[in-house]
Length: 230
Image (cartoon, rainbow, N blue to C red):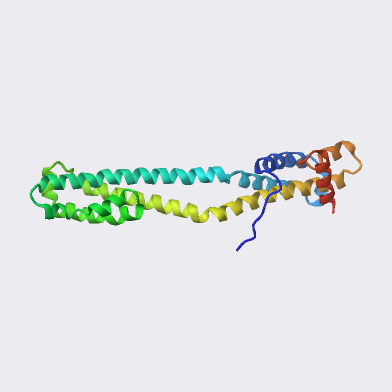
């Protein structure tokens, strides 16, 4: 199991400071002698884009929820579809309770709330359509009604798989996102540390290479710089 990484600062702040550090660093010639030339900053910019493309926890949760909403909507459609078969079966065989009982009413009632049951019951209902097709069509069943059911089954199945995949992948996705932002955080600290050495004789340049991570005011920023200097 991979070790969890906890960021020192909010992701939005890290991203903002990374963009600033890249812009400043590209214009500082003395950084080149420490391996921070154009290639270094090209790589840094790529990492900035990579990190910014990750969904936040809130965005990930919303996407996952949107899949659930779509799946529930398809279950509702499946409910109406199955009810259409059940009603036409009752109309087609008003005096034959045994035929009407062929419809899996109890299981279908559960299927309206449970995707796994819906995936199981739609094929059963399709078999009933095949068996009683002529009678059902007499009661207004469209020619493509069976296809409608099979299409709904495929859609529910895919949405269920998408939902389960997002649930399964969320911890790993979160760690990959956090690791991407950690890279930015470390790059910013490296640039500032090297900058304070390379421009030790320039008060103006030293100012731009001060630690940007202010948590509790100037004292906290000073503490961060001292940690970076070690």
